[in-house]
Length: 128
Length: 137
Image 1 (cartoon, helix red, strand yellow):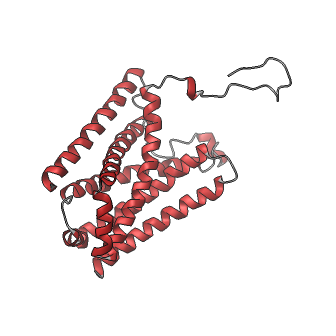
Image 2 (cartoon, chains in turn purple, green):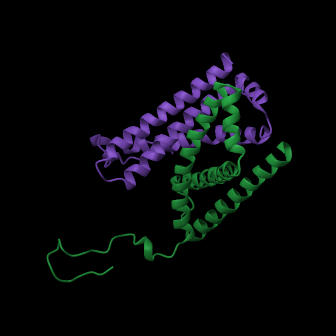
Image 3 (tube, chains in turn cyan, red):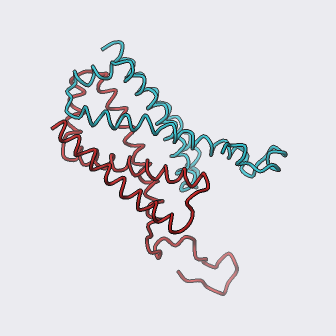
């Protein structure tokens, strides 16, 4: 299964599916969801093992290159999926003039949080 | 809801779908909305994750404050709820991906996969917390 099969041949031929960019967006939602499975399972497993760790132990763990890398991957996949998921919720339930500003806020907020998280990770890895 | 048969089409109050207030909750509908609610809740948890990382980057003092909030009774309840929301959303998401592939639409299969999602997410949540309590203390 790939995204070309999800669009009808006629829709492809005229270059406009019934939902225009809908197929691409639908596909991105699925890819972002699948991409999250491994990083989140790794994160939950790690947190369980470190539930008794103090600050020093936790920071030492975060400084490990593999951990920094996995946390960065987690943040990117997590907030991409969050942005797409909250977008669907807003589009389904919010029909007032607040819809577009809220959609922009969801996108920007997700981007800001991912960037802030990665910045915190880099600060821990290289400065603390 | 009352539907008047008189008056102009504009004045008639039409019954609105899906009439959630008179529908008996079913496993299928409850899991559907639960997947959304858990997703929104996990978005807030994701915000918490970033706060937690920033606290760790800011130093031991700020980190201790955040840890204090997390280890309080309310903090632990929220963390437990977030764990359940995570496993429910993960299992529910896998169920949705199977549907996206075109499989599992028979009524019996839908109920079987629905109960599987409930059972597995409850079991994984309990397992995660039991392991954490035994290894961490």
